[in-house]
Image 1 (tube, helix red, strand yellow):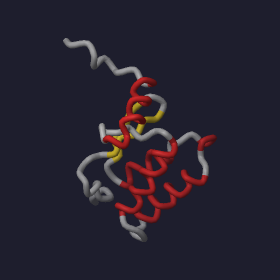
Image 2: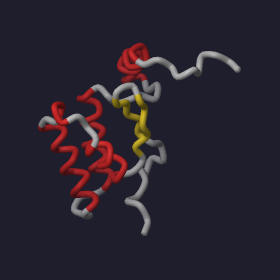
Image 3: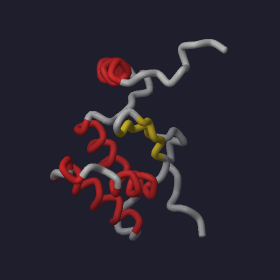
Image 4: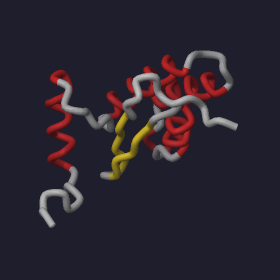
Length: 108
């Protein structure tokens, strides 16, 4: 059986949890990520994202709508890793300054 479809954009969404960056490229990835979200940080935005992913997996809403809700959750939670878009540059910089770059700055 095929996994729940990949994102139409072809570009995975990058989110960061506890300094670890993950790529979300399907609704099932998003749902899996939400299952691991810290219980103490689960609010109404989290529940909306989880409900949207569940609805998309059950084919009640489109996957792109579910991913939009998940992206909103990621942005509100401050875990969205921006891909250098002008609107996100500020957020991206603050995320990068908090996260150590894993050995990338040392040329081998």
